[in-house]
Length: 628
Image 1 (spheres, rainbow, N blue to C red):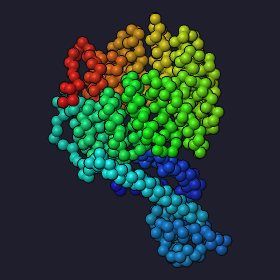
Image 2: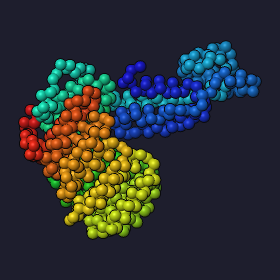
Image 3: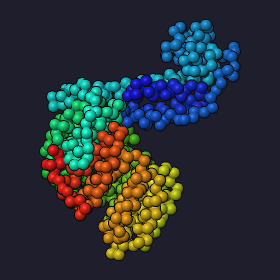
Image 4: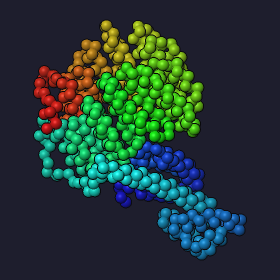
């Protein structure tokens, strides 16, 4: 069974699961499958099908009900209508087992077809027809039809992406047959790179590791991570070679957007926009322009933001409004606002609000209006954001707006209004997050007692959160709120830091736990509280409990980059070196490729920020040297 063929694998699993299953179990399973598959097939995103593997697999339950014993089925009698037999013959004919006419009459050909089907599916061979057998057959046919639809849709999107890339002279050379079948160099010795790392040698090792990944989808994923780092480092030739190794044209299209964003992060605004210009797919190009605008806004580059937004609006003007386009335009408006172009930002926001209200389908309109309202809340116009809520029918789309508005009220120094908004959020997992944000706002305006009361309420509400990850995430945000409040005090409060650590210790997810513990350690260091080495040692111990070495390395590399960004060079290098050591020992090719490419991105940031090593290790590098 080809491992890289998702439809074939899922079809096989489905047919195995459907053996000896009763009718009720089949109906329950098929209902869940149809819902999940509809989401996959109807998705407009260019990568909608590539992430369906795990999603669809999760729809296959372990137990579909008590198996039915075909031997106990009653033989058909005269009371069986011809309709039942017609359904049986039709289903058997669809799967190629029965070749005769659809007559509704039980004959030798029909009975032989039944026996053949039962043998194929490991059932007792009886030749008996009953409702359970017909339901079983029809379910198998429906599932196969759904899988055929999924396969056809995926193939169509893949071919569309391929045709678009080949039609554009700027991207035609990215479709190269054969590079995806390269093999890794088995005699390479990367030890020198791990001892004296540079961006270039880390990425070379990541590419070699990626070549050894057997599954196409996993290899493409790793290659996507690698090319982002290559683009950030200015290694454009290497990035194009990496794109040529990606076997899925849809991933190639997305990779072009990633390159544009990476160039923007490197401060190369003109290069970023030029990279986005050559993307053949209109929506991917629009998304790239929106990302560039957001990144440039973070760097305060007003002219570059305006150029990216102008490009985005020109592209969108040729398309009908929908929720996704509204989201990109809302990002553009926010970027304009952040660089001081308020009039232009508000004018754009009013235009997209009008367009969002004109969207015909309710679901699409609600999502579009949510993006608009979120943006209004983000720029401080909470009243207008709240007014848009009246036009949003879906409660699921209303909640994010209420959360954004509540946080904006708290940030503006109006915690009472924020608390009132938070109280209207029914889902505890969301309400607890908002309460943590409100508490931070209360503490900043000197209402410490009220802040602690709010945090206590948020903590108590986490006990009713059923989803484990949602509960862990909420606990992490509350723990960091306690630590943040403690670190901002003139005299750090030991009890608050203790409460933060205690809450973090109750987090079950290993990565979320480690992330919280590290950030509490950073806040203690900022406040000058405790012994930094003790906090570091405890965080290392918690990180070592993450069962996946690549997960450990990825987390540490991400934290190293964030430390470098805030000027905490000695801890940034410590985290990087530890992640480097872990990555060197990873044998799994997929985990090694992704962790090493993530380290390359962190190294770029360390050098860009001029992060200084601690007194125990004073070796430094430069970006030029790091990329050689």
